[in-house]
Length: 115
Image (cartoon, rainbow, N blue to C red):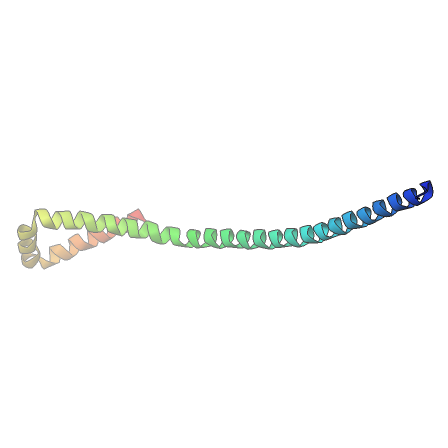
């Protein structure tokens, strides 16, 4: 037969074993959390570098894109002018080369003012 002290000893032993298992699980969870938070920090730092790099590159490319837009508008305007008066323009250019070069210089001045 079991007496009261052996039942208490068995209960205390079970509590100690369960407590040790809980502490072991908590320790493993704590180590896992430390590793996970460290990896999250590394990923956040890399993401910050990526955003900074993209911002820097977009600042560098912005003037180039604006210049390309202006050149594209100029080409579209010149193309529409040529399409409307192609024959007359060609005759004018061949007859008046000096005047045509002045016209080209004026167009260059107009584009220089846009900058």
